[in-house]
Amino acid sequence: MPAIPTPPSPATAGEGTPVGRRIVLGLAAVGAAGVLGGRTVQDHLARWLAPVQNADPTGLLALFPLGSTFRYYSVTGSVPRKNAGNYTLEIGGLVQSPATYSLTDLQAMPQTELVRDFQCVTGWRVPEVHWSGVRLSDLLDAARPTAQAKAISFGSFDGTYTESLTLEQARRSDVIVALQMLGGPVTHDHGGPVRMCVAPMYGYKSTKWLSSIELTADVVPGYWQQEGNYDVDGWIGESNGRDDEPVG
Image (cartoon, rainbow, N blue to C red; front, side, top):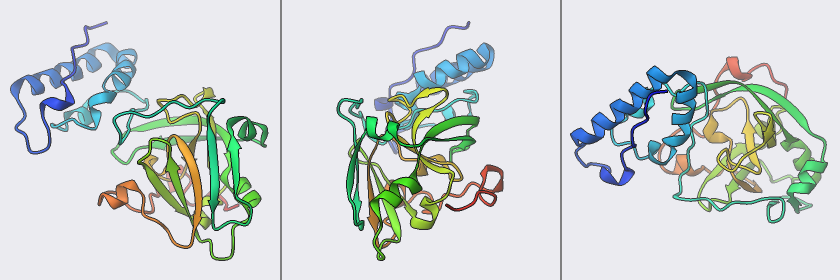
């Protein structure tokens, strides 16, 4: 296995700061390690580079072969850890029966399974990811949305991230509150213990570290839409079930 170089610190170059020769050479060495080492090294690099991926001043990391594996993204510096002892999911807003679910509550509900490619809007894809969890439509039925409810806003316990769906989109059979992925419980790095899986849409629609589901009268733009990036509707296309998955 080739030696993996030390990654450049995200603090060494901010927006609008000239990129130094050491940073470019360091990133080039990272890319070379991925090419020479094959998938094992590429998968290791994907996790190892997580702290600098969002702060990469060169854009070079997006070009490196990191394998068919997840990249680790967060819009905050750190995220608290939750487990069965302290995790809760709040469902409220325009509903007749607001509720709070523990992780154990969600695990006790009927589970559904999906196998879908996971597509990031930045271009990388993980094929045939196995997900399981509770259909969002089941939680909505239990909450009994009012006649005024037309959309859903999702909150994250990172304290910052939000996303949204229309009520019609949320009732699709391929939209689940995921408790397991990749053959085991959703890990913290993947957004666990509970995250969304919105299978027919780009990954930014699948809120990680899910903490709240609020029914709203209108679609509330999520974090990336408020930042001026990405569409409110994040459809991938027919290849990932855009047109062949039934609603409900």
